[in-house]
Length: 418
Image 1 (cartoon, rainbow, N blue to C red):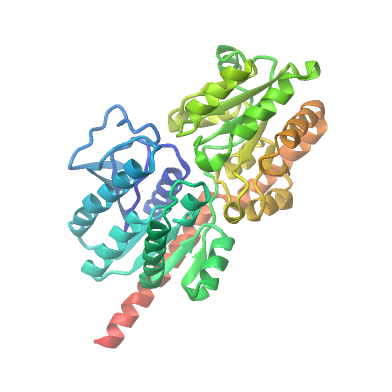
Image 2: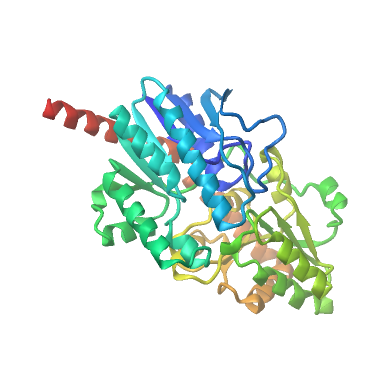
């Protein structure tokens, strides 16, 4: 089967959508299928094209057997709604003609969260008369409305109509959470049209490892208990809570060996750095995003990982993908997100849940874990034991079965009308 995937994030970018797309495609190629990916020049999240790449009209490379076609896009940093929308729309305009020139495709996948990529995928599927699968990684525009990125009720209404059009006209929808499927079913989308393939972890890359002491010395973290956040530092993540927790921890003499590490880029990073400077926090270090090959090395620095999103009902439906990386590496998690992801943490037993946006609760949980070695060891063991149940290779195989069934059903329907 020849699978065509449209995604605006792909390695060497290191965010969750890029990792999911690459790891699925890599495994499909290993199983003997042909995979073509259409994406842009890597630039997320800073809006700067990575070294070794150019923002060309069209370019091609082979990545672990995956045919990767990169098209021109309007590039901007991950900040500012208008410019980001122009970025998304430009990818749609460039990706559609590129998709039409890919020959002998059997099925087309378009990924969210933003809707412009699935629009290009659906249009290509209609024109090529092939089945279209909408991979639903976030509820858009609800998620941007939740963080106040768009306030125009007219624009939100238009985007919601576009969203429903895509759901209705897709041959199948693959959701990353069960909550998303429930929401779509409540909105009138047939439940049997929606399957769930959760995020997972590449166990060949993420596994228990000793702290990288050379890196710890380089960053001034030797002898410190490190509580860290790794990922996008954006509007949805509410990381002011971590800054406030760091202030509370610094105020206590007994907590002077606790240090906070935030690794990543995003629209809120400079504001948070300014907050730390204004508060005189010497226990917080900010680092820029690192190459994909280096991520596990930085994870190894953490005694505990912090996962946090703003206190919004919508975020109770998501499962941050970094949870699975922590699980596989045996890093205890302090989880500040209610809902489906909190149930996962509690069920698998690899972390503690605290109330979102409650800096006092976060600070107290960090102090407790810093003082309780046996609890940290217990959480670590639970994560390592749970990780194989969320192996990305297994999940890629399950998704491939879904794609095969959609493809076969589409062909049967076409034959019955001839």
